[in-house]
Image (tube, rainbow, N blue to C red):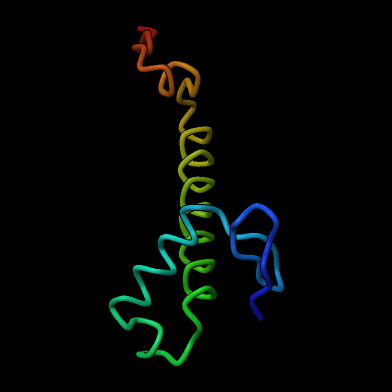
Amino acid sequence: MKLPSAEGEEMVSFGVMSEFEVELKNLLNSHSKDAETDTPDFILAKFLQDCLLAFNNATISRDEWHGDDLESLTTGGKVDAKV
């Protein structure tokens, strides 16, 4: 169910869609990807956004497990290897 929002974004029953999700929804719709699965485009967009977030969390967990210096990796600095 789509409801209008005061901010001009589309609101669905499970929350306000981000600009990325709205653009992704429109892209999915323009390529009729929603029709292939008989799933509304806004649900597919939310699913794909959640997949990206899950992947980001998985890579952070992987890096922590490996003991990578996350601050250095995110700032583009080099990690000093201890010998």
